[in-house]
Length: 505
Image 1: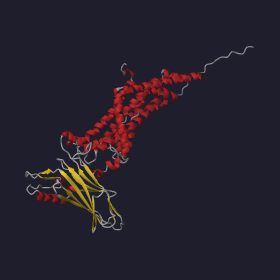
Image 2: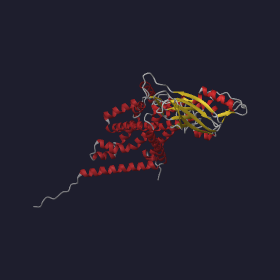
Image 3: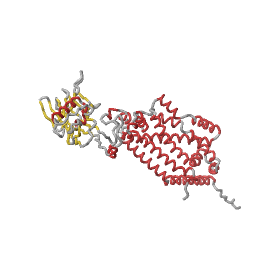
Image 4: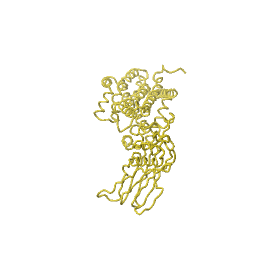
């Protein structure tokens, strides 16, 4: 008796796996093609370049700036006390052909001479100044960073040696002696440095007026006020008898003598600062803050607001849109009604109200933007998914036994991904502009400096009306450039989202 014939039966499971693999491979190939199309477009390259530059600057700021820069430095007027107010950038003065005196700071770490006297010793510090400018310093400041003594408090005498042989006594600085119950060593100025303005001392006004009369008796002695003292210290009476003060070029020396009662007394490094008429790369504002530092700090803040807000809004909106369109029924109705309600709430007035009530916090602003930004994307993605779920690709995946979650993840999401990414990029500049609008209205987070806050401070003080353009234009331009970077990337995504916009190759 013959054995029964062997019948070979195809294994449908392997065929299904092979079919699913083919579908996945096709989708991955389409994604690679879309990425290539994005990178090769001019707007895509420009947008990515701008974004990469901003990202590198942000990383540099995060590495080099202290974490509490906003509260400890930017919002602390004492930190910028030595800087000139409303000083233009150095390069702006150079381009305009106007001479400017740059901000100069000299550290005096070690005395150049130590002399023993019966009462203790005299430590002499000298700060050489090579002055060659038509503009005099706006201020002359001595900063004591710390004094430690065991007996009698040190005495500090400050004078200015001029190139014409004159020596102007500027001031004597008293150091507070021991307090009742305080035990040695007595420490002063280590926690908060003591700042002595040498350019507005009454004794210095009398000294320079007297010196002018003795050294230049043939010239009319000008009236020296405290406001004109820095110019008088670095100038001479005009020879034409007009009573003006002309600059005197040459080598100056700020001479600081510290008289201590004990050789073990310590003096921390001193600083001599000459206030400039120009300052740094981007000048200063009305509080003397270095605007360049504030502009740089705004990069990571702007990218944080843009990327985090856009990412969370897109994640919520896309997930709910795919779920709503694919699931249908009650789930679809609940998600769509919630989207309709939230999308009709005016975001900016609500932001103003919430921030006014709960406080000016950056995280709160971002939270409100996320909560009220997703409905529009949900509605659009749902309409796309409704068409895709009846398509041949989804039907084939169902016939192969794919689960609903796999179909949504592997076959529906890749089809709408270019549109979702484009919408995410569109969300980013909107978030930046929303925060800038709140900051411009005075409702930004005061502990975190942003470009919008810089604009608000300039508008509040009328900076643009009096010609302080460096305070207003740079942050506004950076907001525009940041928004432009995201818009260029979104423009590059249009041919990917809509193949009809692609140019023939």
